[in-house]
Length: 290
Ligand code: ASP
Image (cartoon, rainbow, N blue to C red; front, side, top):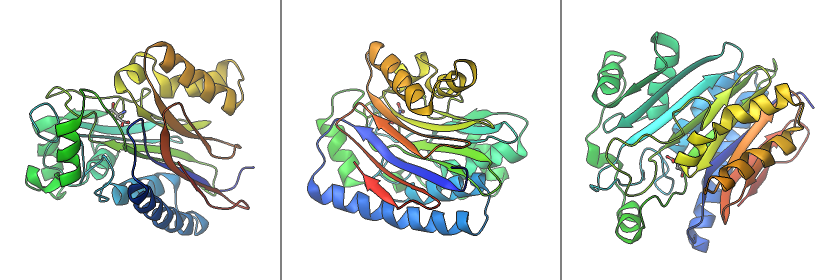
């Protein structure tokens, strides 16, 4: 199996989701998946497709990325995102953003136009402005649901980060992740999502986007561990995914991941109550699941 394929997630979580939320999230994942599949079938590059997918999911208010991002301890929103091109081994990421409308678009600009990998806070926003990206007032991202979660949440509750991995017709892989992080996080906290090798990673053999307790994914270097297990230990993708989540679990965390290799079907695995995700590969059906 080596044709085009894609997986996207709308975050792993342990908080109950109402049937209405599940329905709305499924509808959005279905919509975005179909658009992405059209692009992959037309021969678009995996890197462009994962950026496209994540930029659409950032605009879905029910998901914890862009609009709808989780509120930090001060009730403010700080967004993180990363993108990585497997073929070129180039990455761009950004953290603690308050005014950049599309964090994933900024991550892509950092990948393409900056000598750096990770920019944060005001410096990242200045770079976004230099690139001509849309800046908005911080209040733009806040939704009543995220405010309510903030009121009810215990520190570090997480859910509904977004991510995508894709394999294009040429066999190239890419990964992207975008998040508001964990509810009631400390100001300035950066999670695993924008840390290359922790929450997001792609090389010529694997692409992965993680979601869950970011501190545990950082300490486990989860995304790179997945790729390394394939390369060094010749684990199967399924075994590698299980081992990665097992390690997160032993560090006290829960979460999930989506992944692709050169020749695998899309993998979606989680040890939380749910992880909204959608997958497709050429010749196989669309699949939307929690
Ligand atoms: N992993 C993200 C973070 O820790 C949160 C999530 O996936 O929901 O920032």
